[in-house]
Structure formats: structure tokens, C-alpha cells
View (cartoon, rainbow, N blue to C red):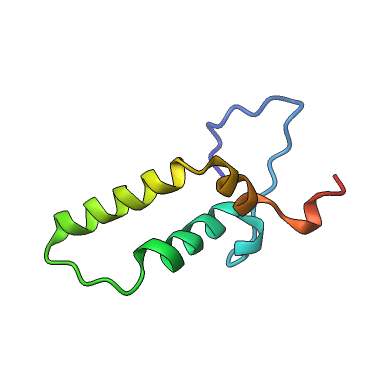
Amino acid sequence: MSERLAVPPNITIVPLPAKCPELNPQENVWEFMRDNWLSNRVFACYDDIVDHCADAWNKLEDQPWRIMTLGLRDWAHGF
């Protein structure tokens, strides 16, 4: 962690252990996008990759309910 980071007294930094995707909801978002919109594709060039990824991201952005469900953790509901 950076020594230059100004952490307010009411915030506790908890470093995530390495290789624990279950603690990072963003991992579920990427997994969903890969499984549904980004897998099994052949791209002609770099621009095709960027365009396809942008399209997938825009599809997800249009579905806020899906983003919320992807970020939920069963074990976190008790807090």
C-alpha cells in the first residue's frame, strides 16, 4: 500500500488476498461478459476487439439490474 494514501480515521483498509476472485465482485462481471458476449470469437484486427468489447460493455451498462446481481455475494447479506 502507498504511504501517500490519505486514509480518513473512519476508514479501514483491508487488503484482499491474492487469487481470491470471490472477494472481488468485478471478477463476476468479467466472467459474465466473457461467457455471454466475448467468448468464442475470431477478430480480424485490434479495432474489432475494441469495438466488440465496447459493444459488450454498453449492453451490460443498459442492464443495471444485472450489474447489481453480479456484484451480490450470498455471504455478505448478514452485514
